[in-house]
Length: 496
Image 1: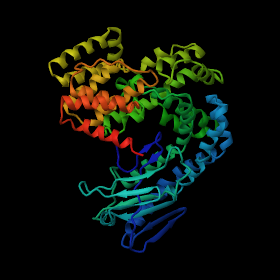
Image 2: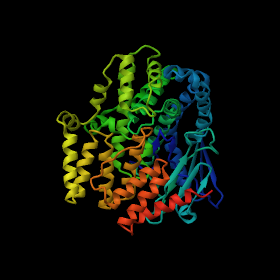
Image 3: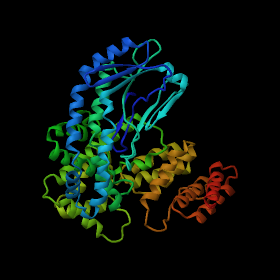
Image 4: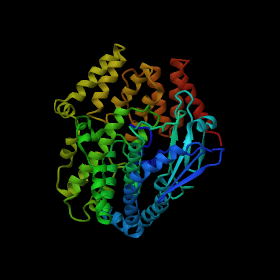
């Protein structure tokens, strides 16, 4: 993944290099609609950038303006989103959300028109800066410049200042290509990514209406949440900007690079983003996740594209009328889809899992894997416990006993806390609204098992039971640092 510009449509954040607070007076060079700002001494670089800009910027800026104009009809866009999703009672909220899109897009115009050159030496000396939503920091250990431009998904209209396209010049006078093959290629990739991001608000609006108001917060229904949001965005683009539809189909539907990852896709176990916080970045896992994003969109299209208007809305009404569920899981969603489409959504969903998962489910592998893991736990082979339970959870992601014992084995191995904590959070999400849960630890008398019980109670809002579990963990192992820290957390939570 290149360093220059990273787009995350779900989070609505774009990474740009931020501006340095240069002490020297800057100069400007104008080429058509583009203004290039640069410090004295970098005239040659400014001329080279102007030559590249005349080739790279205009076609991408034209695409951006087409989309910006098409998305300016807030009432029309709102009506289309509501009609697709079937939430007339949420029209006001959806319109308020979508009305911020104008400010969101206005803030990005400068990316195409306002190009700025900075010396890395200046950034290195100042340590970087934050200007409105833009920031740049200097990492002296790696001599790199982490950069960001953040827009809140919930309040995207509150953008202070406008974006611009920055270019860094290294100490030897050469352009910092940020991982690209040339400055022209880097700029083209970054601006293409930006154009692709312009309708990210449609995704966010659709997901807001669906997820926030119909309880699709189950840890493993992301295939539905993101798939529906992309499906809605594609349908709206098809209606208001048909010339841009091919671009968006290429962004949100699987391509050749995704097909190469098909064997690794497992949509029923694709976790919601909230459960990934704190985990170390894994480039391979991120690649699979991006492919999952597109395959989920394809799946929703297969389920609803050929259905009459209002089908999705009827499916949601069935779910909302379903008693006894605080959070809708995949089984409930599939039941509702099948009832209104007369399709076998489970079979279609299982087309997006690895072959070994399908064969394992047919052969009853989950029980066998769990039994083998329990045996290995008795022998203290925690690495094998992790391997076996991880494989089982690829087939039965809702097995809370397996997930609890996986968290326990990870702690016994001494891996970083976020990895085991993630499993605890997933259990809390899986059991939300289900009342008291009886878990089956492999070694219930182990201090780590007691600590994990405490975490479950604490995250589930049962402070008294959490305190008791932490104290039992400390009785078993008085030097248990995490249990001590957790008790301090509970103590601070009691203070006004």
